[in-house]
Length: 310
Image (cartoon, rainbow, N blue to C red; front, side, top):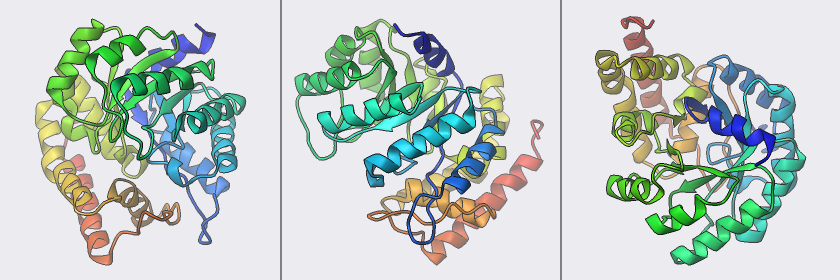
């Protein structure tokens, strides 16, 4: 196993950051804004940073843009935490992303589901085996959308040396229990649900305490306070932030396809830290929903000021 493997695996234990990819008004990648955004995210002390993934609009990046973003992140983070890059698409495309991420200096990969193509478990196993074989980097599987694994498939992939974790964005607790049993817990499980904080307690029951926080990208104060309360068993603070911030945010996210990303960029803009527009097929948040998001942010910050962790 390569030297970076143990460092990446050890990092997947806390609050995981998924920064956006900022764009200019004309739609180009905005690298200066990207580096300042990374500085904002790093201030919250995440245990790892995942760039050019779902939140980073991987599906809308060209191969050259992907490598540029990953390299910029690696140089800016400068080893303070591991940097994992997104890879996705068909098998050969994902393998190209993997090799490019390694050339750019990434520490690991999050392999997103293949787009549109839905195959049987044997096909998924072959896909992820080939992507993992294309690189020396540690690989995190992502269960969501077109990549729903059988327990036997995960058990087989868990034997691949550089596959180090499974991020779940599917939310089937029965399936996760069976996967955990089939792998005897050998493959760490990460909570990758949209608005993951809403599911944090459920995943903790499976031993999955690390989770990806989209909120960390635009309201880091609330994200850090919730994680601290979660780690400390402070259920009162968790309940308060869930009621005042996370539940309304989750409801708003579910109102419109693509809002899992669009709301983050809208939130950054509301807070005076714009990262530019989203790329199609995502759409900008409507004025009505933008006002609703601003109220949710205000409620979250007001709730935070009343908590002991504040």
